[in-house]
Image (cartoon, rainbow, N blue to C red; front, side, top):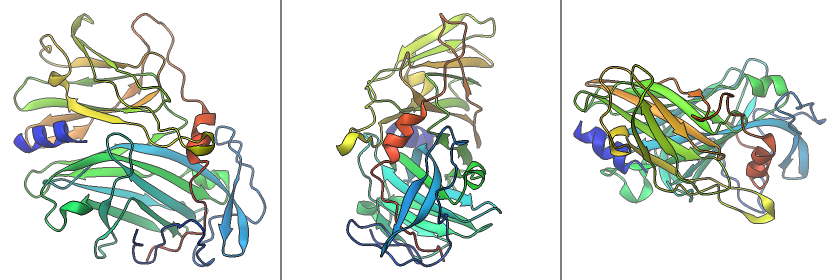
Length: 347
């Protein structure tokens, strides 16, 4: 439990073998899996998306659809490790671009591994996968903490997946796994928060008795204004039992050309955010962002076991309708300035 409390409350390029990190003004050769089409594909089924150009050494080589989203929390070092897994669908190759950020949305230098290779450092990892090819990227900890990684490093991961057609992108399904092995038998899997599937309000059902059963939560600001989020806990009768407000969480960073970078992320034990007595047994947790979009993760710890709870869209207490999902134009602004070069294959 001490590791849990420390990690969750403190929880805030060289190329990998066979990979390349995009460098302004330098273009890698066109080799490996082709995750683009020579003519612009129809990407409108992906929330009205338009194809983007992929460039090689001699200029534009083709066009890709893309999907993007955020893993709202990473934990690496200090007894924790994070792994990101994904596989290209059977229908085609995929270009994968992961970038790492701290709790305020700034670039984060991490040591990572690919397929068991030696650790390398950087704030970005990108590579190409052939159809059906899987990949796992392991995050070890902050580069400054190598080789022991004694302190836990936290933040977020932004992911963009480029595909030759909309159907391939629609079937990309990455996941992130936390592990505290071997010290503690905790291993948790969490889904990505897609840029086009966000809400202003979320809820989950958990149990927190202050002892072996504990609940923690993570809130990631997915909007362009800093805000605090109201947390409310309802007992088995639906009555409000406890509530609180998070500190202000930074917004998506404003970049040149009207594009946006990463936002801030906040994590804490539920009991450290709300005032009032947490109900016995199962209770409902409501995260209310007002008009501000976010992504939310809730973790349940039961002694030696742990799991990521199902988190669903909800509505504000004084409304009867569900909150709308995120608008797609903000997603385009987040991807606008990212390099879209030919990624080398993962080996």
